[in-house]
Structures are given as structure tokens and as C-alpha cells.
Amino acid sequence: MVSYRTGTTIKKVILYTIIIAIGLAYIFPFIWMVLSSFKLNKDVLAIPIKFFPPVWNFESYYNAFHYADYDFPRYFFNSVFVTICAVLLCVFLSVTSGYGFAKYKFKGNNLLFTIVLSTIMIPFQAIIVPLFILVRKFGMQDSYLGLIVPGGLTAFGVFLMRQFFYSIPDEIIESARIDGASEYRIFVKIGLPMAKTPVLALIIFHAQWVWNLLIWPLVIISTPEMRTLPQAIALFAGVYFTPYPEQLAISVVACVPILVLYLFLSKNFVQGITLTGLKR
Image 1 (cartoon, rainbow, N blue to C red):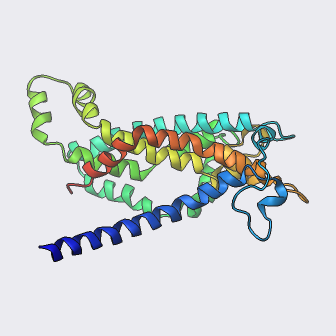
Image 2: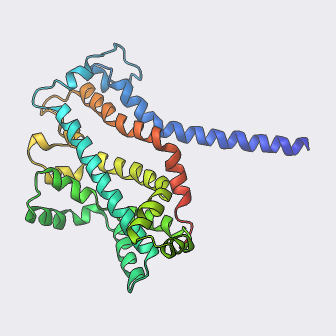
Image 3: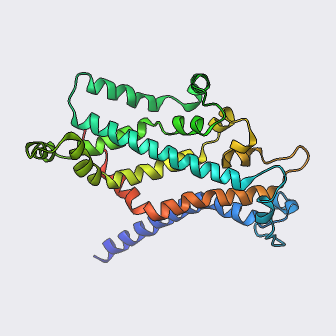
């Protein structure tokens, strides 16, 4: 009995040690970024490496938001606006499409869903050129629409919602139809309330993807006023001098909205992933 308990304790210690090591490996770059944002420019790349700031520089955050030729408050607003709109568009398209694929039987249902799902395997970099040509022909280049519309389309969201709605028994919907409820009322009063948890999980997934998107804004946006925050951070460098503390300070600020969103929705995030993918 004692030997069994000892073995169990050793296994737990090893497991917790591995989990802590992996957690530290993931969080170390973020801690380094935060601490380096309080360093002087000469200390950021100093050799030997200085983990903690020799002199605490609290002006980097103020300087970053008042830097010449870089309107970071505007860039922050652009990212927030684009992310909110793209997420709302993604939720609308994903919920309606997922519900249709799961609960309506029509010719070519599985084939069409397979085609939509197969687009997940196509790297975004492979479709940038045709997507840019399409967006330009629609007159959405260098505009909010050029960022929002492509950012609101995701096959993963359709897959996530389809898998959840597939797990809802058809008898619930059939009973509502027998009671005389319209298809719209069934979707709004039954489908949507039950899908609250996976929808919140989708919001976290898609919000962090749109918020951190860099390559598409670099391609589609040319005027400085329309830049998003990741794009502005990537371009925040001089020819002979780069203000690293200010650049890292803006990077820290850019992480805050997604961290806050995850803290509020983390419980729903885990439950949403657990509830989906249970049925074919």
C-alpha cells in the first residue's frame, strides 16, 4: 500500500514538474518582453544579458504613444474596430452555416461541407495574391472592409459550430416544428441559446487570430492612418536607430486586450472545445 502511494506521488511530482517547465517555457518570452519594456535602449541588447532593468525606464510607454509619425492610439482603435467587426461577421456566418450543415438535409450537403473544410489545409500565404486581386476589384483596398471581410471568413468556425449543432438531438427541433414554430424561431429560440458556449470559444479563437494578423494588413493597407497595431509595430523601426523599449511597450499593450478577453471567457473556451467534435 505504501509502495503504491509512493509511486503515485512520484508520478504526480514528475507530471507537475513537466507541466511547470512547459508553462515557464511559454510564459518566459512574455515576462522578458514586459521587463525589457522598462529598460533603456542600450540595456535591451546588452551583452552580457541583463534580465532585470539596471535602471527602470517608465517613460517608454508614454513615449510610444507620443512618438513622431506613429499614431498608436489610432492604430489601436483600428485593430479594435476591425477585430470586433470581423468576429461578429465570423460568428454570424459560422453559426448560420454550421446550423444549416448540421440540421438541414439537402443534396450535396456532405460534399459541400467537405469542400469548405478542405480550405483549412490551404495556407493563407497561398491565397494572398488572388485574394488581393479580388479585394482590389471590389474596391476594398486600403479600407476597413478590406480588413474585415477577409478576416471574417473562416472554415474552422463553420466546422466548430456544425459539430456542436450535430450533437443536438433532432427530436428537439422536430417537436418545435410540430408545435408550429417557424425555422427562424427554432434557430433563434432553440439553436442559438444552446450554442452560447461554443460561440464564446469561437470568439476567443477568431479574435486572437484577427488581432495578431500581420501579413494581410501589410499587403492590403498602404496609408499610415489605416494601419493595424501589429502592422505598426512591425514598421516601428528606424534606419539607424530602433527604439526597442517603446517597441516592446506597444507590444505589451497589444497583448492586454486578448488576455482580458481570455480571462473573462476562459471557462467557456474550455467547455466549448469539449462540447464540439463529439459526433460525426
